[in-house]
Image (tube, rainbow, N blue to C red; front, top):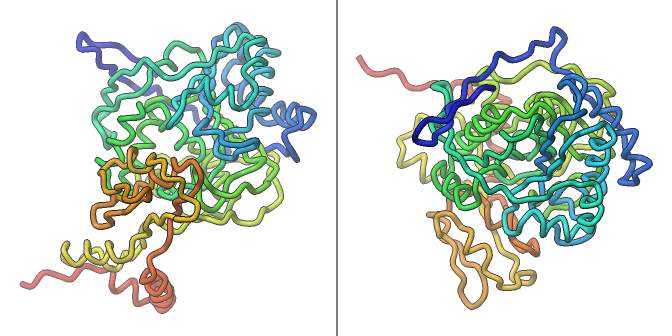
Length: 415
């Protein structure tokens, strides 16, 4: 990737031609039963060293690690990469001669140094000479014409490093079904801007997936690593249930890595992969060290029914149908502590606190699920609308009978 800064301070990016892999982009899997350093060392060597070698190695180079540090509320919280793995990754880079290592992130409600202190690894990272910092230098990027978004404002610290490691946690996500390597780069967007982007894309989840793909295309990390030793399923990405899968995975291509893991998790058609296919971005993959099949993750309710057979309905009918069928945030009054964080972080301000409890204005809710993601006690979950259950059964019957193909066809205009 090459860039230049205009007089107006806008970054203009021109993508280098991508490397081609005749057998598909390599994706490496390695087994680790837990986060014991004795397990992590060999697993990192297996999955990371081939990717580091392909990138020219790290000896004498500056390396930025961008981990998922959404928050860390308790020991082993699966909302973030595991502290033992983050520490072992930095040790691994130091042993291989990295000249400078920095952990840079932009957590949703805290700072990166604060999260690292909660993890209990701040002193060890300091001994290694690892810098820990929040994103601070934001630049506006002028995107190529092929992008769905013309300008994006991203943290520009990654431009000061020779290599960027996109270090994600495998979790479910109420909007994107899964959050893996591509989604992890959304953390480079300023916190307040994230709320704005949620508001801008509204309920168009494919458009949000396009935004994530454009961020990935702008940054294009050459080293991508996903912690799937203990994943999060259910009410992700902040309050789901930990589930052990015992795997690390890495690749030089974040989208290839996402594809391999999504298929392994049996997560089906996710918005990011669906849009990548439509845009001609999804690469073929060559999996090395493929693990045994794993049980499917318990996914959150789909944020919007497919209902492709209804797209030609008049807009008022279609919008009314979606309001009735969209999954919605629901608060558990017994668990809610009345902190009000959900209301403060709601992009459209469609959530207010009344008598110390959240009240949702569902007609104006854009289903970004920021309230659910950032609730510190997991009191908000995403639930299917009752009518949606009935429609899902109906849709399966229609698709099985072939009637759906007829309904998807737009009516011909009258002569």
